[in-house]
Amino acid sequence: MTSYPEYVPYPFQAEHHVATHPVCTNGLEDHSHRVVIAGGGPVGFATALGLAKQGVASVVLEADDSVCFGSRAICVSRRSLEILHRLGVGAGFDAIGLPWTGGRSFYKGQEVLRFEMPQDDNQQFAPMVNMAQYSIEKTLLDGVQAYHHLIEVRWQTAVTGITRNEDGVRLAVKTPQGAYQLHTD
Ligand SMILES: Cc1cc2nc3c(=O)[nH]c(=O)nc-3n(C[C@H](O)[C@H](O)[C@H](O)COP(=O)(O)OP(=O)(O)OC[C@H]3O[C@@H](n4cnc5c(N)ncnc54)[C@H](O)[C@@H]3O)c2cc1C
Image 1: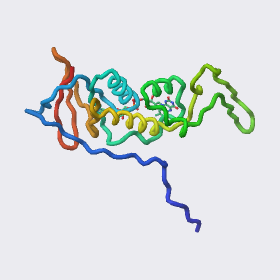
Image 2 (image 1 turned 135 degrees about the vertical axis):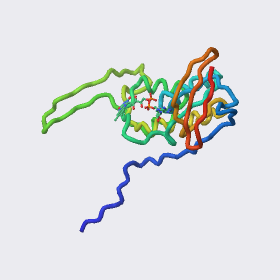
Image 3 (image 1 turned 90 degrees about the horizontal axis):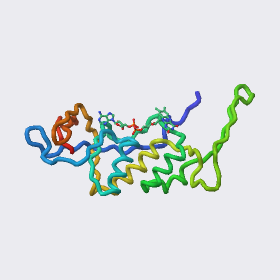
Image 4 (image 1 turned 180 degrees about the vertical axis):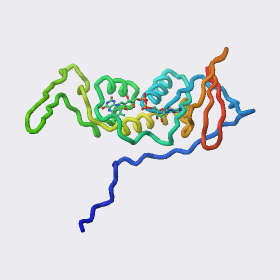
């Protein structure tokens, strides 16, 4: 019988993060926050980084315990790369990304699609770079962690409710250590 090596779905090993529970009084966190971001995906981390670069502190609430490592983006557009570089987190992508400018698709040996994307010497980046989303999220997270004085990431913290009030917003969250509420401007 043929023996196969152990199946490893991805070469990526996500780091798992523990949940935290802040100091609360009657279920409401004592400290109020200027900005709270629900979701630590590419958009949430990019938002936190963009705010931090303007000196604005934020808390990112992420339901999961790691960056996403399932099947997600593989083709990253030039515009996304421009944004990532502006946020200061794109420098390492050249080493792991595969840039491309056009494609050809075949069906049973016959070419059924051929395209070229606009590209010239004035462009800093290729129109598309192939790179797994977990690499992008990990790079964004590294950038976020470099701003630990302004950005706090709370893992395993799922938003379950949002209530607007006169001076901001109150969020209800649940964590493995229990539920609580927090206030943000
Ligand atoms: C199979 C697949 C292929 C794709 N291919 C491409 C591609 O080639 N190129 C491309 O540009 N895009 C692609 N995309 C789209 C890309 O993945 C999304 O645009 C991108 O992930 C959106 O980022 P986001 O931060 O807005 O949301 P998400 O990545 O979904 O992040 C949201 C985060 O919020 C967290 N969350 C959810 N609910 C709560 C809650 N209640 N409380 C706290 N946290 C919560 C989630 O755990 C998650 O981490 C693909 C998507 C899929 C599924």
